[in-house]
Image (cartoon, rainbow, N blue to C red; front, side, top):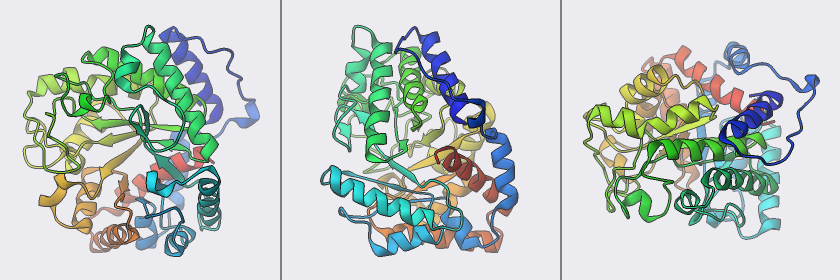
Length: 382
């Protein structure tokens, strides 16, 4: 989304929510860029034919330690990475982080398609913060604040400022899970705003509108919702099945996503839980019924989809990294989050996607369209 449109939508959204945060400067007409649709079509037409490069442009990679390894920098220079996710172990202090981010950005500037590298982290607030600084309030405490909407908007602004100061441009937040019972999986870590889906939608939208108004892309997660997961049902560790009625999923769990999509959220992350009412066999992020059927067709989301961690325990029954990567692409996931802090994971995913493209298992036109959505997001963050 162009800066002028993004800031205008930010102001309108906060006005609708009844939040006043002072005047928001509007850009000039010269700052207006092509629309998301125009940019996507143009980039699809310009997409390269090389399968390995094309595959890499759907990968978010990770690495261990504070210094980007030479191999990671070379992968970025070759244009075979869409982004990098940073964790606590990658950050020892402001100066070190600034040096690492500068190296990553310089490598991206030398790539054949030098769009902004998607530099991301989890800065939800409360216990889930990879960077020191705002937002300090967890989602639960935000929902309990005297003015929850204002608190959520302030958290979104705080997250944007923290990421911008660090040189990052994408936040894997907010969480839109509507928790069922107190102290269940998502509530135990204070990551859910409320048991009320309308409140979750309102607060999540306030957060993302404020954050995106300052130029940091937001990610709504974990579609279609992990609010029913019991305390021990952690998809990072094991397979999880949430056997919920279809009506309940659509009326309760998906409700906040309708609000987020209407507000222009840039990305949606899929859950690794299985929802038998939607697909009895595959986790949401590997299911065409969930991603193409529910998220794209039913809810009308046309932004970028991103997987949760490709190394998650919930995916053990679904093969190795390569098999999971191809299944995710078949389901309609755009970005694949290779977050094991091992660059080889990203290489394995890239090689598998390229092979599936060359064999015809993955449709090249659909694949190129996914890359175009990612490139449009990257171009908007330049």
